[in-house]
Length: 148
Image (cartoon, rainbow, N blue to C red; front, side):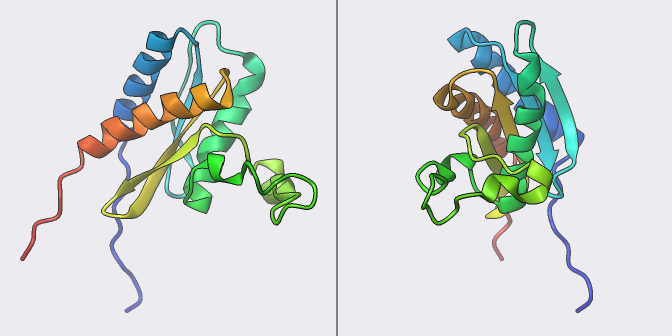
């Protein structure tokens, strides 16, 4: 077989994730930069809430890039990126875009990564919390595969 079909995150799906993440950021009182990418790590949607740090724009986008491209939450690197750790220096990969700070979470449909949400401005825990709310919202909208 030379091709295969894979699910694709739509702009509507990205907007769903963005709205839910923005709502959560408002609930916790931390304005965020929120980025949504597809499985190819290309930006689909972005919002900078009023008061979000300008220096966190690229960080949010790169957290989403890392979560989609590496197919794992950025929080998994915390203990591995210190000097002497098995992933020390990984942040230099991909032109310096690889983020090892929590706040990037992949979006999955039937176990396949279709995109990711990246958030930045708060603490790593706040960023991850907000990103997870975006992921949960869009994943709830996926229809389960029909069983034969």
